[in-house]
Image 1 (cartoon, rainbow, N blue to C red):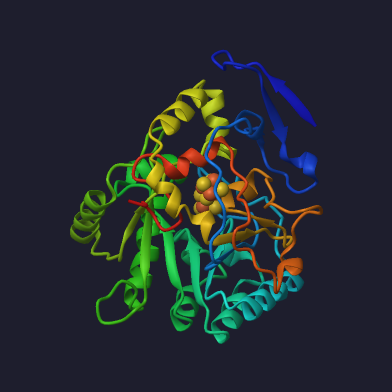
Image 2 (cartoon, helix red, strand yellow; image 1 turned 60 degrees about the horizontal axis):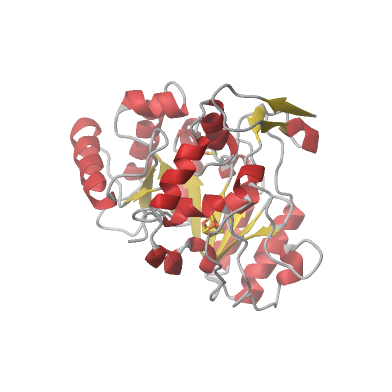
Length: 348
Ligand code: SF4
Ligand code: SF4
């Protein structure tokens, strides 16, 4: 089912999409952003040697954050099966790609998560878990922190501010203190401690339609505040721009701020960031094994380039992706604006 919404301050009518129309979810209505992003003068870019396989194992999450570009939540039912997880492992073994970046939703809620981690580690692949920290406190996940430490999984965790009020406004009541509890568990197991190599990185994103502040200065402010106030440690802080897609993009449309935010991103574009955007060396795979140039394109349902049928990971085993064109649209300025933005933080 589609509805047309004539927002009072919206420059043009925007589609409201009932995500249930895909037969995938009981999720809420969000404005469709892709029709507003397709026409773009973003420069053409192409792939370099593949270094990272990013896998979204499903959209179920214990949180429902306002800015979520996945539109994740407790009622989402999409989940990667064992069969697709095995395809991921076959791809890793055949390609020699040495980094597996697992995301969701809350990826740990997928029944295949621990299998995927353990088997990837057996292949000597470095594993990253995009963890929301509060999942470590959920019933049934009591041993999750120990599991992650035992498999030497790098953790990248969202904490969009070091102030409780701001985090709870964006991510839900109680999320800030729940995140601190999660960090304490990880610190106790050696994460972010100088004597070992267990890595806990945090991610900041702005509260609204603005660009992130300089990464290094903010990292120091985070470190000082979190250490002095809560006694918790982390390794690095990554600053990420919000993408004008899914829940955040829909919110901008509702508030009549969508076009102004795109204008800001375009005006802040820096050509030198094009060299390092993450899609150059990463592919993104969804819970059904379909392939995209990045997680944002996945959420927009913009498949990776192919010469015909929709690209599936199973079909790319043994294929060389170097030089293939990357599918870009207007949201890509979110990666190249200002200091740049990628799943590893600022680019410059
Ligand atoms: S931003 Fe992360 S933690 Fe929040 S709802 Fe989305 S997937 Fe879950
Ligand atoms: S949004 Fe995706 S495809 Fe576009 S520049 Fe960023 S990483 Fe590349």
